[in-house]
Length: 196
Ligand SMILES: [Zn+2]
Ligand SMILES: [Zn+2]
Image (cartoon, rainbow, N blue to C red; front, side):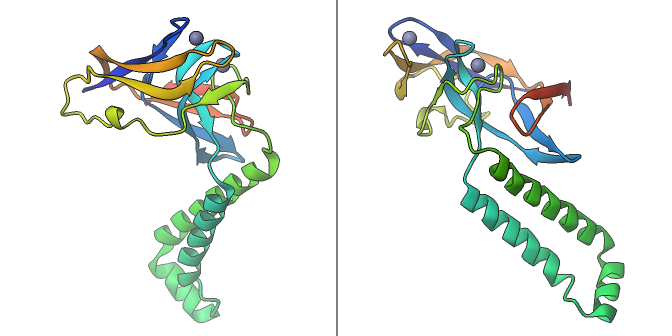
């Protein structure tokens, strides 16, 4: 199994990197819970790289909505009537445990917003001196059916301090699917990674 990738190249200084890079599953480790961490494409001035290694903190409003949904799903199976609660717990033991864990995970995600008032950071070096690509790149919406994407697209990502603009170029190679799972501290610092 493999998939295509492409490079982002600064049209002024030539700084370049793989747009997507190796597929990884990323989580914050908070109180023994794995809270999903998403990345996005950007350029980091700290380690002078470009690629998909910039943290995406997401929106607090969305985190609140997700927490409320998890709460409602659990409440349906715990209406607060002792006899019924006991019966439902007997019938749906595994589902209730899964929903309880989901609720804890959503609470941990919300806590992340309480302690992180700063901007997203580079997941390689921790620098917050980053610029991120705001829009999705339609040309990158390729699937496994495409052998390669070989087009060229101008992006809206500028290279801070240099002034150049990043161009996406399809690559004439494919990347193997080797999944790594990576765990980060709530501050976005890599704790460890393992192949999965
Ligand atoms: Zn540049
Ligand atoms: Zn960096």
